Length: 270
Length: 287
Image 1 (cartoon, rainbow over the protein chains, first blue to last red):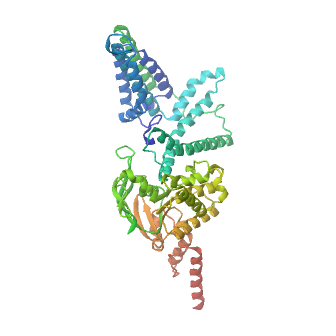
Image 2 (cartoon, each protein chain N blue to C red; image 1 turned 30 degrees about the horizontal axis):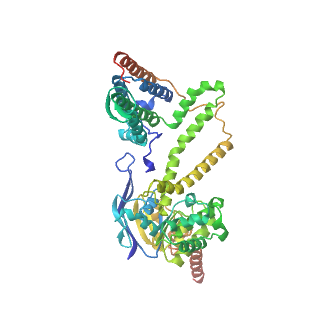
Image 3 (spheres, helix red, strand yellow; image 1 turned 90 degrees about the vertical axis):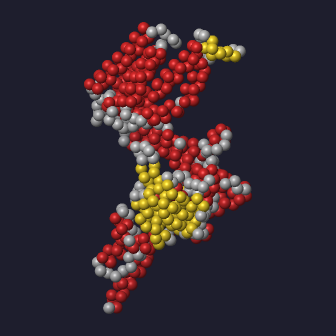
């Protein structure tokens, strides 16, 4: 069960997207998120969707993995889509007392669903194709200007690295503890919601204890080595902005420009 | 009739993905009631996977497992009952403790079995005695215990279910020599008194050699041999070829034999080895 969670899991590969600089990927992802919310009509949305699918295809990672990442937030997607149906103006298609479904509402719902799904899948592209160390390395460099305001950029990046690094460890641990409790007859698969939540206590308590133990051990180990990665640190892998990054940047610029053109020349529906 | 029987079991992890890996292949064996069987194998030989199959935590991709002659996966909904009959102590079991008191934690298994309050109390106290926990420790929080005591408490939690077959996966891992010794003799005592079937997974030949009746040797997901302890260790060279070590004393006997001294190479304990060498020496002096 827990093995199926794929969020934030790096999948090694050699695709174009694996090779571009994490900074480029992060900045482009942020721009992407902005632009997917800028789409005002179906033409723009279609351009963005096709572009998203192309990017996903280029990672050479099975599409199933992306669908699995969607499954985790399926409930959120359905719920927001459902409520959006009832908000919006335009032609009234169905009405029951105060509740009414309008054409505008349906379009809203479609936009929200596509946007959230694409957002989730393209965000997964970043985490799937970038190793956690590269990712936080990139973020640290991007956040460097904040040092002027005495933000502890390196410490934040280190915390993120550690958090990401321990996701698979804790998942494995959860699996082990669940098995151990199942062997003692814990029943986690049947019963109503309250019963199921209660049955998680034998798993959660050992998991928390172990997480704190690990955190303590790690902190001690870092202290013992006088860890201070902020000052005078040199890197084995220095991030380079290469021709590949330029290609990615230009490619995205073309798509974003197309979205703006699409917004300008076709009537807005939302 | 055998208590546990495996018939051509095969287990493939992550079937259909790029991580596909055959952990066990075409494994068959029978274990008799009341036996003490040691399972040895190199890291990654499939020992831990095998024991998880035996109590229904994993389902074999192919083949069947019989408990008292009944296929354990006959009714998948009743698999919990199999887990009560085949008790399983995992590696580093102390990480599974969660209750407020040691007593409650040991009672978790029996409670899940739906036993009466009195019966639970009796079982918890018995299990505590078997594992050498003191009466006053039962009311302490499991997190206040020392590492070795935590492990005892966790093992007691499984023993309290009084399983027909008790499986222990590396129960002595990470314990100091004294703790190891004590825990092993407690397991041996439990087996002698209760007459339950016990399966002990370990990579320590010394431990296994001393207390098992029979040994199942695994390598790369396959059964290499299942034979009496004496017979298994007389195949010293074969064991070494799959990366296992025979007990030191057995190794010495093997080397003596190769040098032309007529000793018994199936000696497993230091005392017996000592007597064997003494015998040979006294024979020589007579000559």
